[in-house]
Length: 159
Image (cartoon, rainbow, N blue to C red):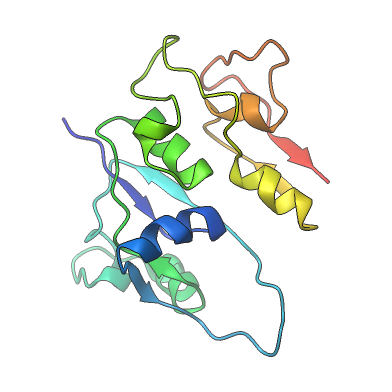
């Protein structure tokens, strides 16, 4: 079964990827030069059309619809058929085949020279945090030996 990842809110790295394909569905206006809050929500096993804000009349998603009204929503993000390559592409703003994560398992390691979105945001003054699935966590300060144990990682925060 193919796995679909729907991206509700994507920060700078993924927005570059989506913008190359003209994928901006909507964008909220911010006053002046206010720096935006960035929230990336990834959910497994959902297609693009499974939310009210994407036009589905049968599935009620009122809270996500309200959030989408105030956000930039990207609807043209191309995913890999597996979750790990998709998450690596999101977190680095690159095609998954350029990140070193081509599949799922220990043979798929992130290339050493890749820069993750949280690292980029930290350099420009944002506080970053990761919650939930963290198989890409070694690049943002997770397990010191560079490996990960899926679904057993603590939430991490960098100030």
